[in-house]
Image (cartoon, rainbow, N blue to C red):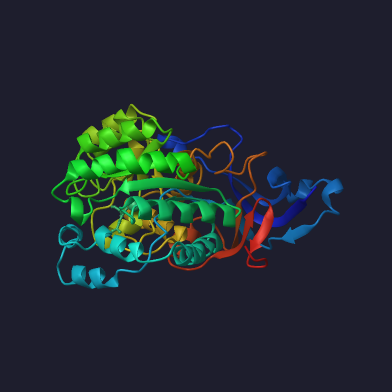
Length: 419
Ligand code: NIG
Ligand code: FE
């Protein structure tokens, strides 16, 4: 039996024994803590916790880690990333500085198509090595479960290549990795005048092969202006459902384009981006099980509006935050920075922001029965911070690396052991 006792925790954060699988509206402010605490992990799970003054005598001989004034939190869960890519795109960043918009660059064959051209020329092994490096970096920054999308292949062979890389990543790390098929990320140049042809390719060629090899957990579509229409998205989601792939949608990043309503109609697990969310979208989400996911790093980097999360929480919705790490719109996956943006730009309290990157993010990946809170029996994927005074210091001190150690399945894997 493997056991580790964390002692002298300044504050154990994010305790929840209510059994809730997500938090919505005013519940998002609920964030239980114990000061001067201990926590016992056993066989990869959280076995018990309490106050130092009540530490059972029987635990005192167990292997211990002294947290010495640090906070202990549930790991961050990043429910939306594109970390398999071939190259950075800083030339587009400079084009935007000089006045071009994200959509103009995409329409001229840049953007996603630029990334696809580069990925098509890179081997599976090289893609794996680079993505593995990024994944380890994210883990060292406290990400304890992650979703990774395809979508820079855009041919049958290259979408399969990306998904095989994600499958290898799943096997290479001990944190949960969910794979999402995003062949409907953009229409390839060869299909610009033949949209029907690309939809058929996804439905008749890509989906059956992906299902046969068991390469994806979810199906995503970029349902937005200049990309896939709600009708095209619906057709693709219905086809994917026949292969057991639940929807997770990119929607309402570029306009009020029906992405949210389409996601809700198909009972999507989540709808992500939401920079353009009005009353009609909020109403649709209130009557659904679909988790709204905001990606503030994208708003920061592209200079587009932030999703109106304050309004959404006040209307009673749950919200989730994710990084969207990708080479075009968000070349960074640090969840600590996502927390800072949520607090400074979207006016979430630190507690609301933490719930958005833990329990609600776990819900968006169907992991909240096992991850996302300090709960007896849940997996011990935890973050030990550096010495800080309070939870609010984490988003307040933006850009600073405040993580001292990371635990996966009750083992300290960063920085003392290799992954
Ligand atoms: O989530 N918006 C669509 N897809 C990605 C960006 C893709 C890219 O520009 O490479 C996103 O922001
Ligand atoms: Fe994305």
